[in-house]
Length: 83
Image (tube, rainbow, N blue to C red):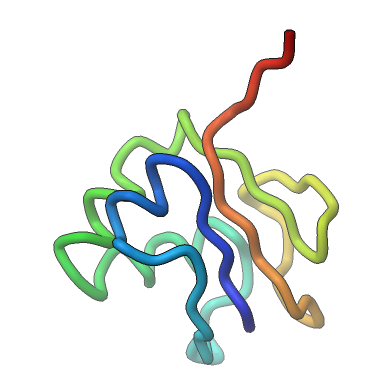
């Protein structure tokens, strides 16, 4: 699955994209974040305050309990305000 990072998440990780093969036990956005946070200190920092993050699977906004199965892109970003 292609992960795409924006804003402070991208800055914390030092990259804007990475390809991940999640283990079979990872089935939701929340489980994916838990697994990612365990991969490195940078990942743990990037996903520490999930209340300040939003998620999209294949460019559709989803909540943390959404299933990731079948998605090819997972975007993680902070809330955005327009003006």
